[in-house]
Length: 465
Image 1 (cartoon, rainbow, N blue to C red):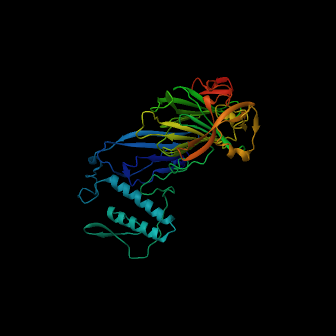
Image 2 (image 1 turned 45 degrees about the vertical axis):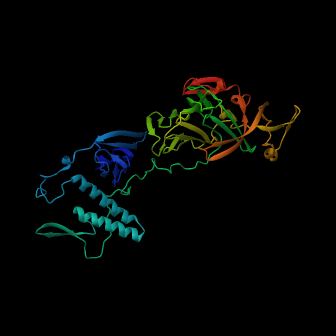
Image 3 (image 1 turned 135 degrees about the vertical axis):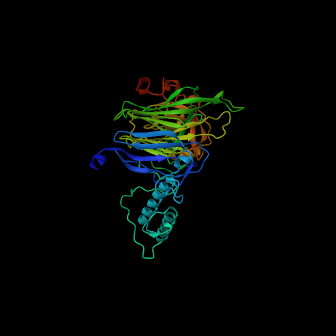
């Protein structure tokens, strides 16, 4: 026994099946898997015409998380026929041992759930369900007795007072009959949740928004790049070790538009070099996490994966939150279309949720503004400029000719409104034209990376991870 439990191989083992293909799945999460132990799961097929069943297994050990996917061939019904087994050849026994195995496991889970419940009505319901199933499949439980008759075996409810069932040997991690409860480390989150994060972002075509909380206003600009361009969004490789790059994909421009084409972020790459090398490559369909061991995650399934310094939380088909050392957080929105128009593409949006862990030297199209403030000036009819206070910002909104002062540079801006978070929030911002000319250091071409894993240690310097 010690030889078995003294050799743990995996922990947090979860076995998932497509929800529209199976029902009434027994326990499919197991805290540990030891050398020589076994895992048994049973359920009912909904689609009985299919010849295969998709299975996904996630687990972890002391070094990494594991994701395995496969399609398992479905046996013909005759293969589960156990006629000829001693005791059942009279034709009156149960012919399908897999169905009996499912009922046995389900009864155990019902009894254990009853023991854990504090609600009397729920306890009665679980007891009746377990008792009914035990009578159907001829199992003895604390709520049924076995009587010998000449005709064979028969189970009846006991007339005596019920005794609380023992749960010795029953695992503490239980599932509902439908299964799919999330274990620690792979917990499910509410899909399509509203994200409360900073306005600082790059989303859409792509539209950039920079929020300046102390100045109580936001600045926005567009980058009209080319398909295939890789834009450096955050560059702090030398200090915090973090770099974020976004690759553009092209699409035709809408009819009667002023643009020759549209561009969207098709891939977001997040690199972290401290305390150890790791990276994330995110697309609207999948995520690759590599922290020494490579892990592939689907954007279609909610999950949380943690390592020593990195956490990736997926809300299925909605967003991905990446947290680095608990001081840096990015949220990537997933934009997918069921019936896209010709000018639409599945794409990503990038939002900065927490930038406390980024240094004052961070750069990039977004990173250069995280630790700097700008001043808003009112341009009079003359060429002089008058600085305005924060309480006068509202009065300036209708003015089409205002000016920002950034690092000694004067940038003409106009008032605009932008929608972010999938259109859930409207942002008032001062818009800088011409690819953010004079607003950003240099020109947007200075922010082009040569490949997704480019890391810029400082503005104008390019290295590779």
